[in-house]
Length: 116
Image (tube, rainbow, N blue to C red; front, side, top):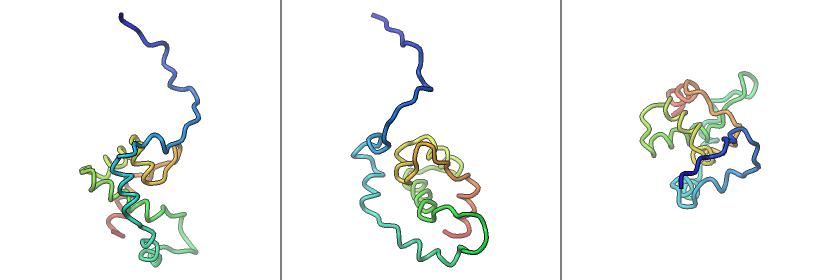
């Protein structure tokens, strides 16, 4: 019997956690358990000013973005940002919530060139 979907409810409000959306065997969960990146803060501390400039993007997040790009063979920085915006597993790995804004690809690119 042919069944048609009822009206789409794409704008309905749901209360859901991000944690269950990432499968237990996903590679990002294994990476999160295997690597410990807080040492990055001490390495890049001299590159940030505490007195001037705009608020920074977490350097561990920027490193993890590059890590995602290489691990999942994403060919460009623009595509990496699009993938992070649409793939909940990547967002979970970066520590983003549903409504967190992913850094612009140019910010990612400049940090990659200047810091990594």
